[in-house]
Amino acid sequence: MKTKTNILILIFLLNGFLVKAQTLDIQGLWKVVDNVFDGTTNRLDNLNIIINNDTIEFYSFDSITANGLLSNDTIYLLNGFEYYDIDCIFIVNSDSLLSSTPNLESSNNLSFTRIDLTGDWEQLNYHWNGGISRDTCEIIQERDSVYFYKATDCFATAYLKKDSIIVTSGFDELGIDYFSMYSNDSFDKVIPLVEAIDRVLFLRLRQTVGIESKQDNSSIQVFPNPTSECVRIVSGDKLIQRIILYSMSGEELKTQYIDNQFTDLNISDLIYGIYILEIVFDDNRLTNMKIMKY
Image 1 (cartoon, rainbow, N blue to C red):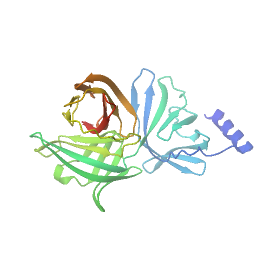
Image 2: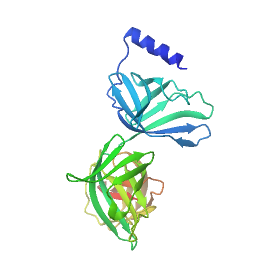
Image 3: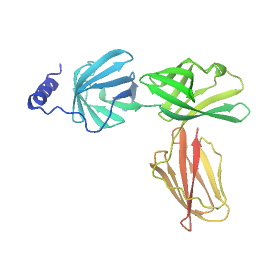
Image 4: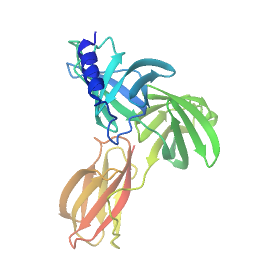
């Protein structure tokens, strides 16, 4: 079934060209999506990738589902993905993989996106009366397993199943049995089994990258914050020249030119998370602040 691939692998082996992908570590858990020809998608199971020298193995939990050989930035498949009959998977970057075109009319390709929840997180409990209580924790992800820590105390455990975090212990006081995961930066549970709380939201805490903070003493108001749609930015004594919204990794997402003392910024199209708002005044001084989309 994979005659073409096997010939390519044989050529690589005979000529001694089989090498590892340069600098990219693709080991870990990956979200797999079938991109259908009509523009829709089918969510497939998560797969763990394990590398042993030049051999790549794909696991669903503890069961191996596919394997192949790694050459430069391409995985040449030996077994697995028989339904799609794909020959290889291309390494786009350390967080993204893309398959060759399947021998299947209904599918354009398979895309792989890394799942990594390890890091520091903020927990927000939204109370029925409008209040928000906050806490922080550390999450450690090992393959499909997820561990929640406060200092050295592991207070909850879970495992990843497609786009859900299935709780196996902990969160008893909130009656939470699973979370819905939206990205590597946010997950939540709506209407947990506690009458006083409407929603529990986790947002990743990150250090800003590539954004220099030069705080101006001007009176700035940004509200409501957090928000699900728009924030209003009001300057008390200076004209705002422009505003720039960054992701927590430093990527520029939105820019608006203002020349006024107030403006509105619509963030309804963004995913849940924390963002950096940079406000530049007419004297070229600036200030940065965090806003949260929920």
